[in-house]
Image 1 (spheres, rainbow, N blue to C red):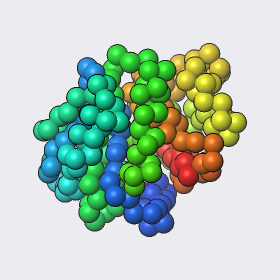
Image 2 (cartoon, rainbow, N blue to C red):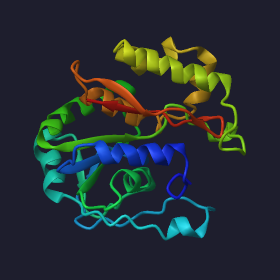
Image 3 (cartoon, rainbow, N blue to C red):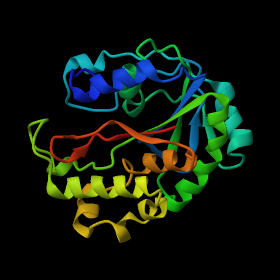
Length: 245
């Protein structure tokens, strides 16, 4: 619903989009493209995928007509991730990508590609793969991980502004402390280091958590860490957004 909402999250994302340097291309790692093996989208004109059900009709009419970038996709295939990914020349943009991009870059005039999440990789394997992507930062590519630090749909409250669960606040704070200390190994081993109940409840499944690892992996020690968005929605969704650089 944040795709069409007017709230603190969308307002701050729009503000961020106005101050970000314009990238040459965008690479999105979304929680909503899980695959066997790792795939990169190479579609020249990617469709806007409406991969959700039971929402207002207006959401299904949204289009984000950004072009793809087959050249960049094949660079990942042959060079950056040589031998570690496959090309999908039909994949469109899922809502993990376009629901963010339409606030950051509403004109849809920057080429976008996506990288899938291999559901069989460990967190450490995702992190190791993502480190190869760091070179793209020096080539004008904006890398976006789209997910949630805390994402538990089963324990959502009806009100968007409901008081967040204590376990959700605790896990969100744990991630922030690890980030500030650049203790990325604690994030990779969050089940070991985070308060036990908060880890289990905040990350019941991994797909919304893994995109964070891709942003950690491409950062460096000189990056300033800021939070363009903070807070929770529906008590069990952390909307914290992390910016490196």
